[in-house]
Amino acid sequence: MKLLTFFVLLFASATVLAQKEVPLPHGMVYGQKPDTTAMMSAAKVEAFMGKKTRISTTIEGRVIRVTREKGGWFELDAGAGKVISAHFKNYNINIPADLAGRKVIVEGVAAKQFIADDLQHMAGDTVSGKKQHEVKTDPKRKVTFEVKGLIVDK
Image 1 (cartoon, rainbow, N blue to C red):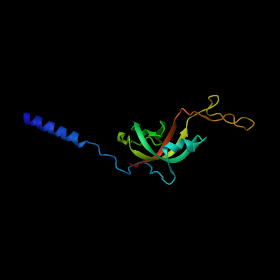
Image 2: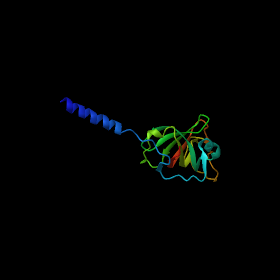
Image 3: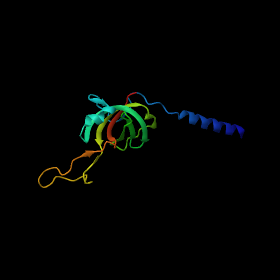
Image 4: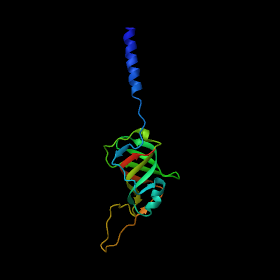
């Protein structure tokens, strides 16, 4: 009986040790492979956007934390205490929690959250053809990023 218990414990401990996670290799791709020809730092994205509310771009930055593995939700460091909240466009992507602290290159659409004048976010033009509302970006709200592809850099 003792011998049987010994073998069961030995098998269980070997199984636990075998499940040790492998570190993420350099160049691991999630989603589509990002185009790195016009890449910029995550700290420069908000300044590059100016008054635009959305741009398509490729950025490089450090992952602060992975908020949800399913769907690829994570936060990027944008420098000066700012954070870029990012998620994959394709919800079927799973990213590991070990991505936190790693440098990544992500391609997708950066968007600023905005507030319309009278909370009518989808309001159109007036009868005269002039724009009825001006987009006011809130500096306290963070930039969001819809990711098409991610590659682990360092």
